Each structure stands twice: as C-alpha cells, then as structure tokens.
Image (cartoon, rainbow, N blue to C red):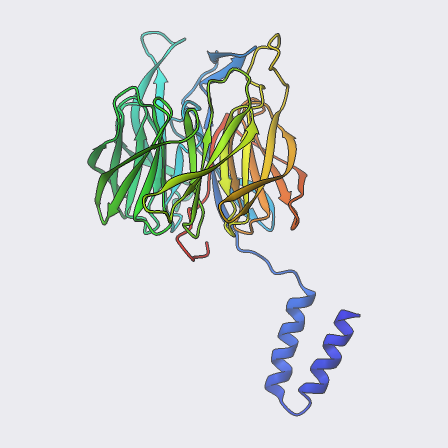
Length: 408
C-alpha cells in the first residue's frame, strides 16, 4: 500500500515536470530497494601463543607468532579477506591493533614473545608491526620499537600520529605516520613501571587522550597539538584497575572498563564527562565479571561490553562459567542503562560495532572465532549465527576510529 500511494503521489505531482518525475522515481527506488552499505574493514589480532588449561594461562605446544585477520563487513555479513602473520598477544587490553583512517596501514603491538631460552615461557617485548593493507595480499612492511610491554594502540583522526601504551614502562610512545613510514618520535612519561599503562583512547577531535593505568587505578590525560604530545598532569581515580577505554564520536562521553581483582566479583564501567573542565568521572554501573571488549556505536546510542564472566576460571571455582557474556547498554547523556545481554564464546576479548551501529562483532580466545550480533532499534541483541574462524584466539578487534561529526 505504501508503494502504491507513493507512486500515485509521484504521478499526480509531477505530471508536467520530467525532472520531478525522475526525482520521484529515484525516491521510490530508495524506498523499495535496500541501500547497500559500502564494505568496511575490521581487524582482528589473533594470539597463537597462549591458551587456558583449566584456568591456567599456558604457552601452547604449537605456539607461533600469531596473525591479523582482515575482515570485510558489508550489510551485516562478514568474511575474512586476508591473513597476515605478525606477532600478537592477548596480554593487555583488547586494543592491540589500530588502523589509519584511510585504511592503508595497520599497527599491531605484541607485549610479549616466546623466550628462545625457554620455549615454554615468554618475555616482554616492545615491537609494533606495520601492515600495508593496500598491498595484494596485505603484508607486513616493517616494524618500529615502542616501550617495554607495548599494548593498547590508537591512531589520531588525521592519521598522522599513533600513541602506544607501554605496559611495563609506564610511558606512552608517540609514533609519527608519514605515508607507509612509521617512526618513534617521542616518549611521554605517565606513571612508574608498575602503573600498568594499558591503553590510550584518543578523542575524536584529536586533541586529547585518556590513558588507563590498572596498576594504580588511575586515568591520565594527555594533550595533543600536532606532533607534540604532553602529559596534562590531570590524573584521577576511576574504578578498580581501569583497563580498556573508548570515547564516543561526538566527544562528549568516555567509558572505561574496570577489571578489578578477577576474584569473581562483579566489575564496573566508569562514565567520564569529557566536556567537564577538568574531565572527571560522573557515574559508575555494575556489569559483571571482568569487562574486556568495549565499544561505543558510531551513532552514540549504544555501549557494548564483552565479559569474561568466569569462563577463564578453573572448573572447580565457584565463579566459573562455561560462557562469556555480552552486555548492551543504552547511552542517555552521561548515564548508562543496561538493556540486554547474551551468552558469547568463552574467554572473550575484542568487541566492535560496524558503521551501521547495528552490527556488532565479538571475539573469543577459546573458540578462536568472531561472532556477529544484530542490535535492534529498541536495544535487543540477536545472534545472527555467523562465526568467523580465526587462525588464533581473538585478542583484539578494531575498526576505524571516526572523527567528530564524520562518517566512516
């Protein structure tokens, strides 16, 4: 009935105007035919070194360096287009891979490597690998050194700088990006070596960054001015052991995942008002055991968090659960409202929204795959049944970090 009325209206109002007839026909076509969203790139960093054996972190018998999966997402359907062998690790927040806004380069951190003196053990590393995503097939074209325990990495909206959190050094490395060349140009002190610098989330205007420090329960604020990155000396407390952090596209709110002590208690998300002067925590919401993957939808309406939910604990533990849990929260100004949850694969890590703000990808270390969910307009979560097989356990998932007011 809608189509007939639209056609009748078009015929009546455009009878003497061919241009209006063409415009009406085009509008009717958009009503009748689904709009095809251009393919977008999602990157999965895959750990092939570590595994869990009844809750104990163990080096795999068949351990190798790991990989990055280049996933193409179109109209809610995802496929792996390429695999690139590159050092990766699940240790650290699930933000160990990042992509330039033009989708030409990817940077991947590896905070540890297999110790050649003892194949069953690992040692801290500082390598950041550079992947040329435009090559056919995509390939590693070099690496750059950051600081010890290089973990979370983010790239500025203009694609000229990357910031790397150095987990064992208490610093943030500043990497300059010029075409396909990446250079370490500065190191910003943040805390001491025990402060557990984990991730750097850059604001969509490219002027500030939040640094998580799970070693001393602190968030630090950095200022960014071109290639100059400074510690603004604004350190403040959030929940216990802040780990992952994301900032909404409009730059108004940031959300931090607090992983606490990992002893079975329910953990929290902290809400940060990015427009306050100085920035500050304005709310906390309890979500469940060990929030790892964390993402905000591009339209700013939803926050999704992947909970380990005890799936990394020994089977004899009273806090053990065989599955992880995906929790969806509605963002209302500076408030979070829990609206839905769904079981997911064990030992989950990365989570990321597609550009449509309705497709949601969540990775599992244990099951070595990525699950695809659909978010309904009213906040429902539907498992589409899609499973993207990986060559290792998912350690991180990232898409382009959009600039303020921009599309992807």
